[in-house]
Image (cartoon, rainbow, N blue to C red):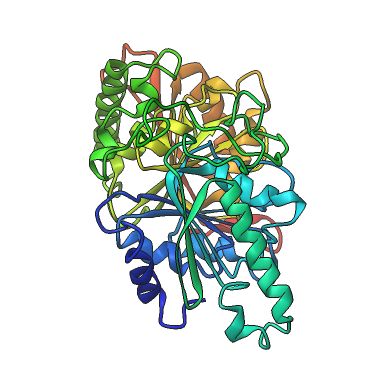
Length: 431
């Protein structure tokens, strides 16, 4: 819903929200339409994660991914969104038609959970500017006025401040900490871990922010502006909140992943070109792979497996985007939506959890024809993977670790072939 175009809409947002200076890097689009908001934000170095329901008539997520914009199939229902708390610098609902005040405000409380302290929420479309559109929307003035009032009251209870309302746009800002929240604020959630989201139900309460010592301190720690933010030690690591990870080990991980990516580029000259736009890291850890690849030509979906150490909050603090997922299940996307997949240690992690064939078949489903996968794992695990991929019509090649043949970890490069089913047997396109 951008009558003057997405650029003009973003310009108006930028008059209130510091989009241009790198303060805002990660954004959430609830109901992405044709993904113009995310596409045009990318030109301004902002990564928008879009989600929308699966819809055969209007496949919004498929459209977004085919444009090269981050998106997943998802819905605000009863289960928490697969993102950590305090992940996004900005969130938007543009004619998303989500009933924000329904179920005691649970959906807006979930947006509050994933919005960073000091983050912005944009509401454009119904009920904003109801005086102009009430007849078009075929709703009464009183009904629309009451709906907007309820949204504003709920935002106030969440400790948000209304910063702007003009035309079709209203912008709210979440306070940087809970110190100045008034007595009328929403009840505070008692659950200990706000990042525990996998198959966990949403709650009708406000997610508490980390404690602060002064009124102006940003809860959880302030972030540098992007791109400095990408390589700075994330606050969660600096504060010792990620078990087993220190500032030193974070730097070592960055160094190691830069070395890995350098080796991958020697193997595959297309890495870093526009050939690979939608990239997935199936076991993202601290986001070092995505950071080493960072380029306007591509973006990376950083997946943190639900059975691995929870590092997704760190990934978002770096200004990258990602999602929690269990690889024993299907990934929330359409077929053929990723150009390149990085699978580092995935099959060792899941070796006794579910069938390797099932994970590989799901990778085959989401990978574009002629897309590439780079596996990195122990040699015995990769031999099993290589055997299965042969039956999937992937071309594979096993390679030694970049430090030489004596290292037990190996690299397996696979390319999905383009083939079609014939009248009898399936045939390869090059036959």
